[in-house]
Every structure is written in structure tokens, then in C-alpha cells.
Length: 287
Image (tube, rainbow, N blue to C red):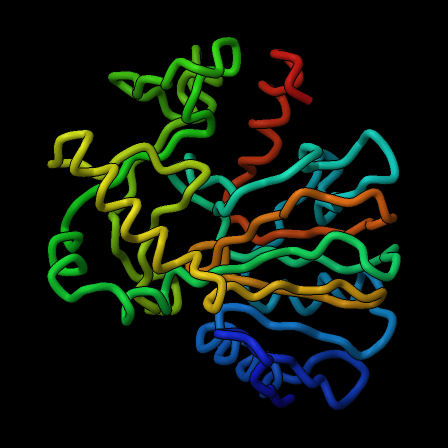
């Protein structure tokens, strides 16, 4: 198993080299490459669900569905059961607003028309080297708040308020008003990689600052993190598999076009958080 750098600010193309079950040495190499690059692209022809699951399972426990099987999801514009909402999605980590954001995501191009909507990626780890040293040092030790809905769904012009206390996921009374979490602004992921953890879609504020100061710091961070020359736009092809670290790499979808695109998705999670969010989401008519 080898890797070649992508023509991009970060990430690598993974070369599997041989068929059959992954050997122990290949599993170790895959973990190292994932930690080193944060995003891996496999472009070697058709990949079955079982093969996708095998590769992803090297990085941790794949969240199961209600029947105990690896939870298969689809991001698609081909039917109404897509696991992602329609339209543009700005940069985010999945479940940034949960106390335990999922660590790894994989998506595979099952149906992809030429010119279909790309997926954009930005590295929260690499940006640390480009930010002013004084800002990075100011961020160390600070916490940031993240909300699923920065503005109330029933009143889009009204900013959401962080509840006090935040009910733990799954406890009685837990629901959309408690889709909030606080995380260190800078931390190390499970592989020891240091990363910034703030994103455009979900980060409400940095603690210990006035709102105006927090907004200014976030604007400075986002300008560096989402600079056009620092964003990798993955132009999907049929058979592409992309695996990324959801705690060091953010993703986004630009304004989509109508060309067919169906991506098969599995993710790593030590908790069954998706089932909880789906249950409450169904109760409130979100899904």
C-alpha cells in the first residue's frame, strides 16, 4: 500500500496494490497515511460495500444501523431519502455540535454523471501553520461553542441561544434545543494530530471574548482556512472512494447542479449517535 500526494493543498491518493483482505502491515500503513494526510482518495475501479467497510473499519468502529449492520447512508439527488439536505452546504464537520463528533467518514461514487457537483474540503490542521502565532497561542486553552442551528429554524433571523445546562444526548428532554457542544478550540485527534476545531456552519463563538471579538477572530480564521488556494475540490468520478478525518478536515457542497450524483456513505463512531438524532429528527419532522 502506497500513497501519492494529490494535486491539492493536502490529502493523498491511496494505491491499494493488491486485492484480497488487508494484511496487518497494510492496516498499519493505512492508519499512518490517514493520520498524516487527513484525506485519502482511492481511484482504482469499482469498490464493493464490503471493501469500503473493510477499509474504513481499519480506522475504528463503523456505526451500526438498527439491525446491527454497518449503517449504509446515501448522499444523493436521485431520491428523497438522501441523508444530507438539498442545496448548498457551507464548510462543516459532521456532528460538530455533539460531545463526540464522528472521527472518520467515507463516501463512494456509486452514480456520478460527468460534471456532477463536487465536494469541497479544507484542512483545520494545516491552517495552524498559516495563522499568526499570536492568534494560535491565544486560542490554546479556550473553548468554542457549536450549534446545529446557529439561527432558529422557526425564525431564521434570530440567533440561537446556548442552553444552560445542555442536556446530554439521549437523556429525557434532550432535543433540537440541546444540539450544542463545547470543544477545545485547539486539540489533538485520536492519532495525535493537532487541529483547530471551528467551522463556518456550526461554530457560534469562542469563549472568554466579547461577541464582537469572537466574531473577528473567527473571520480571520475562516479567511485563512477557506482561501481558494487552500481548498481541495474533489471532482467525483464513478468508483471514487474518499475517506477523511472529520475532526481535522471540513467538507462543503457548493450550490449543486442537477446532474445525477449518488454517494454511498459509512462512518466511524464509537457511539450510536446517528440513531438518536434520527429518532428525534423524525419526531420533529426534520427527516
